[in-house]
Length: 252
Ligand SMILES: Nc1ncnc2c1ncn2[C@@H]1O[C@H](COP(=O)(O)OP(=O)(O)OP(=O)(O)O)[C@@H](O)[C@H]1O
Ligand SMILES: [Mg+2]
Image 1: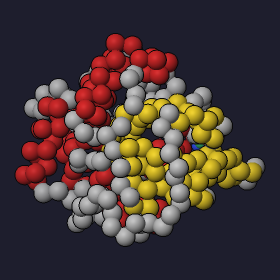
Image 2: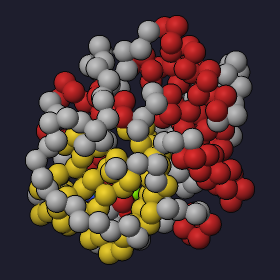
Image 3: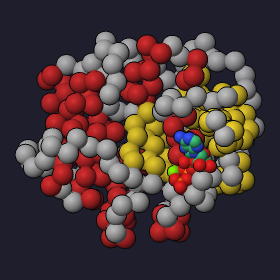
C-alpha cells in the first residue's frame, strides 16, 4: 500500500521577476514501511517536495495523497489531521531553545489537542526511544547538535505519524553524529514508520540501505527505484488509514 503518492505534481514559486518551476510533473508512490531517500543537487526541488507533503506550500497542478487522502483537498481546519500523520525534522532542528527536551516534545503534542496525562506519557516514551533522558532540565540550546536532532525526532514521532520526513537531517552534524542519526532513523523505520529523507549529503547517499531511491534534477524526477504507475484518480471515499479527529485547530 502507498502511504505517499504524487501524481503529476507541478509547483512554481512566483515573484515580480517571473516564476521558478520548482517541481515539474512529478509522480511517484512510496510504500508503507519504506525507507525512502530523495536526492538531487541543490535547487533540485527536494525541500519543495517535502513542503508540499506538509501542506506549507500548495501545488499548481497534480494530486498529493497521504494514506489515501488528497491532502490539498482537505479544508484548512483539517490541517491538524495532516500534522498528525506527517512528522518532520529539519537540518536546523527548529526546537524552542529555552525549553527542555520534554517541554519541546510536550508542546507539539498539546498542539494536537492531546490531554495532559497522555502528553506526559507519550513525551517520556518518545524521548526514551531516541535514547534521551526525559527528566533532563537542560534547555535545548545547551544540547549537542546530535542531541538536538534526537529531540526533534522524538517530537516528530510523539504524535505517532504514518510518515516521518527529514530534510537534510545530517546537514549540521559531523560524520559520527550523522551516522548515529541515520541509525536512529533506520530503527524508527524498522519499528514501522515510513521514513523519507531528502539530502545531498554523500555520507547519507552512499551509506544508507534505502529501500526506495528517488532522484530529482531541476524539478524533474529523473530516477525512481520503485516506479509504479501513479494515476490521478479521484480521492478514495474510504481513507486507507483512519485519520484521528483532533479537538484543537491551531498549529504553531
Ligand atoms: N520561497 C521560495 N521562493 C522562490 N523560489 C524558491 C523558494 N524556495 C525555493 N525556491 C526555488 O525553487 C527551486 C527548488 O528549491 P528547493 O529548496 O526545493 O531545492 P532543494 O533541492 O531543497 O535544494 P537544497 O539542496 O539546496 O536544499 C530552486 O530553484 C529554488 O531557488
Ligand atoms: Mg533543501
